[in-house]
Length: 206
Image 1 (cartoon, rainbow, N blue to C red):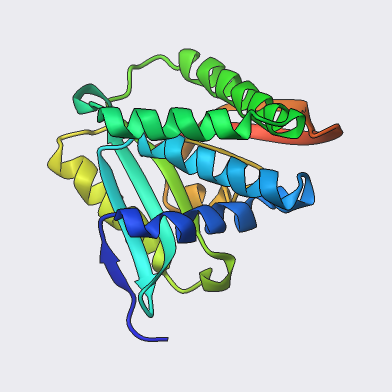
Image 2: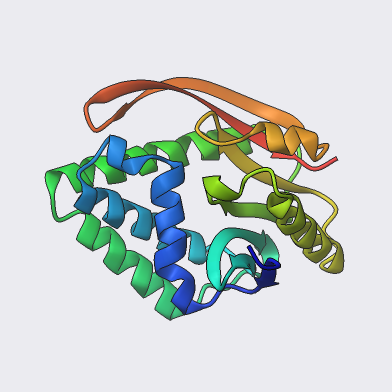
C-alpha cells in the first residue's frame, strides 16, 4: 500500500464510502442486497447534511476511511444535499423492507436525542460520522482522521464536542482518545424482524 492521502470529501467518493458503511454495519446480514445498498446510501446522504468538515483517507486512490464534523451554530445545509437525502430516503421507502430499515434509523435518532437532552451543557461541536474500512484497522488511520477533526474543532474555538456511538461500532476508540462517556442507553430493537440488543453511548471530549 502506498502512503495514505487525506483530503476533503468529494462527490466521487460516494459509492466507496457507502460501501464501507454497508460492510461495517453488516446491512446485508439483515436486509436484501438491494435494501442494504439503499440503506447505506441514504444514511450517507443524511450524514452529509449534518457536517461542516470532512476528511477522507485514500489508499491507492480509493477511499478507505472518512470523518465528518459539525460546527453546530455555523451549520447551513445546502439545498442540493437536502434534496439528495430526501430522494434517497424516498427510494429506500419504496419497499416494505426498506421502510422497516428506515424506522430502525428513526428509532436510533430518538435514542440519541434522548441522550443529548440529558446533558447539562449545550455543545457547539459534533463528530457526526466516522468510519474506517475493516481491512485498514490498526494502521493509525483512525487516529490521524480524529486528529484532523480535533484540529478543526480547535480552529473553530470549540472546546466541547460530542459523538454518538454504540456497540456495533469500535466505541472503545473514543476512550483511547481520552473521551468520556456521558450517557448510556441499553435497548432491544427490531432489525428487520430480528430482535437485537444494543447499547448506545454519548461521549464528550476531555
